[in-house]
Image (cartoon, rainbow, N blue to C red):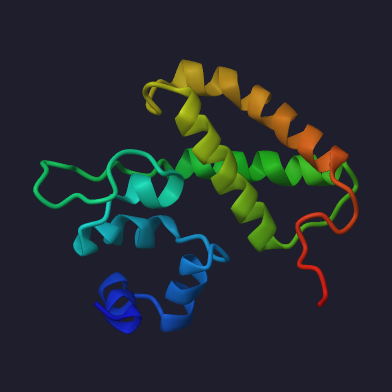
Length: 144
């Protein structure tokens, strides 16, 4: 399948597909769920969870917890403000998705609200440590 065909199946632009392939773009929750149409496990796309392929399995795509993702986004934004840093919306979104992935790796069941709520302060603290310890220019491409 070509890149354009894959993008068409997902309902996104070719450029958006190419950015995801280069690890420069994060799919939205809606786009993520469309990966099953390509036979690809959304959990594998988001965080390397489970098998890459869903073909020949009884895989049912998990629902992305939008409220939890928003809560993590609010947490990320609050940490940036607390550290007196301004982040573009895409950086906040990327960091929220990273925290979501980290949370998925820590819990047996993402629907266990008590465990998830208990871990959010831990994720917040870890993110703040990374943000504070980052040196100017970290994460940016070097000029060549």
